[in-house]
Length: 379
Image (cartoon, rainbow, N blue to C red; front, side, top):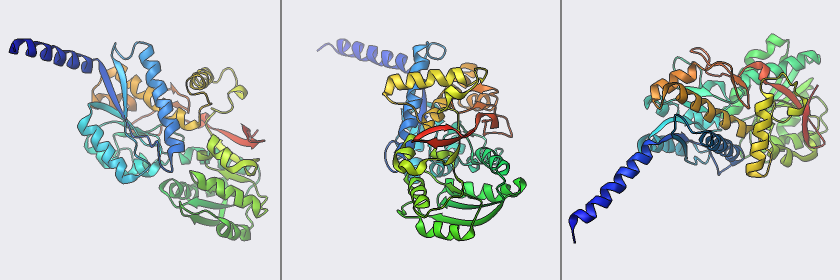
């Protein structure tokens, strides 16, 4: 056999492979598509995938295709660290779209900081990026607990609420929400009359809610994610409690409506605008994008998008915008994300800065209620 006849095709294939690699810009994903938080992570991956497809259909970035390499973390902190290290060591990724889960986001902060590489997390706890000088490489795309609580507490003040009771999940998301509520409620003239917690695997929150009932609060807040919040709402109704019931922004999800059923009617939820587009003014800067996003998502997946899909969609588009400005350089991408101002997204209008890695602004939040199993503006 002629050695040259073998080597030439091999060298040609290597050259083609190298050229193809150079035509692709990779970003890593850590979205949990199985496990207890798949109801958050799978919509997130769907939204991120749609963003990548749209970017590539419009010519990519500088003529190069964008590629999302997602590793399923299963919502597990240890697996999240392993997945982050795999992405950083085995794939030529220039930025990360982080988990929907606050706990997993906390778990990988050190790995991301040491890399270093910019990550836009989809977790909702402000501690993921606070203080920003110590978490220079981490940003958030969702609405944060402090931001949505400001809308929630303002509504309570307007309703004359003076005392509240809190039931939170014993999770990073739940305890962060509790801590921020304890810190900020008094500035709205509101006192926390009772606070209870439940474990992530609990199937009945009646004991905690019975103790809350004894405190006779003017309103009740449930701060949690996943199926537990639906169980708590059902238990609340079963106990005959009638005080206004507020939930965290994690409840603005079709899966929650399905699990809670009729018990969800009349609850109050701070949320992005994704479920009430028709109620927005034409002058709202998010309305055109929201309309197009819901249309395109529905066409691709055959169902309307959950708010979590919008979070990851925004994260990919903000990373892409940074790459357009500075190229596929990890350090420069971080700086470009931090420099984004008035970036119109599905979840929010974002403006980051050296002292603000939250990005989302208060006027991106609306207060929803549920009527006959559907989301609607509360006012």
